[in-house]
Image (cartoon, rainbow over all chains, first blue to last red; front, side, top):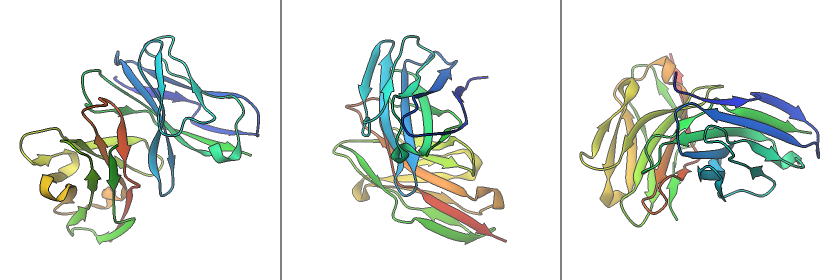
Length: 113
Length: 114
């Protein structure tokens, strides 16, 4: 089954404790992206990757890091989480060649205390 | 840069009634337009998309949307709402110059009353 998976689905952590949210897709998509969803703001792009070893900032990159060492994986790293990073996070992927349908993961609800 | 406005934060509709969700976009050229639905506790599912051609597009679950260039709008409609349509709906726009980034509206929450 074609899908984007994220882990963990729920995470409660404390300020300053490094964490990683994993994202994996099995569709051989070149493009992957991370969004955060906050009430009243919709989804905002954090980082994206056009292919292996190619990443770039989205609209709200501060406090986040990403890496793309393999085509299927695109982890989101919070080196020193803060309470304002409490949010719902979505990973998405799509084929290269134009903005076709983006496939979204199930989301990760992060709470930073 | 592209942007999307969904003027209605919350809409309540009776089961069986029609539904229309508004979406206005800002972009200097022909955009790619999408509607996604997010059911409670779920991820985002694509309802329909517009790239070019016929300005009335059909999607899943009985939804349709009409692209009106003159009004910069891409409104979503459904003739008869079911209780299972209660969800949050997001309009999104993608740009030609940046092939992949989607800019989302703030979303419209739909409540269906019996």
